[in-house]
Image 1: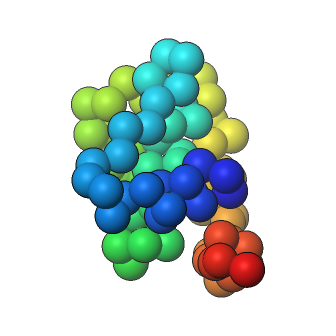
Image 2 (image 1 turned 90 degrees about the vertical axis):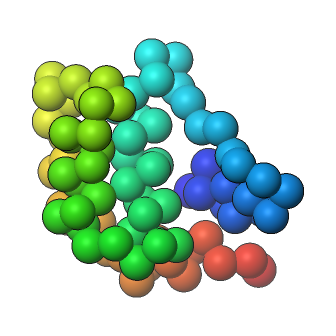
Length: 83
């Protein structure tokens, strides 16, 4: 949630760089959620980009696609809205 809020807060100043220790996995999830929440992508499209976008997704983290498929988008959208 903090990463998604930070992206929203800083994107007006230009591109936002997002990464995790290995440059994959959690980064892919946050980027997929950004696509869904802020760019209105479908879960399927965001998941496809995450897994096949040549960004270093590791299939060993099968819990990430599972989380994305089950994510309550309305709840997440409300949670990252400014207070």
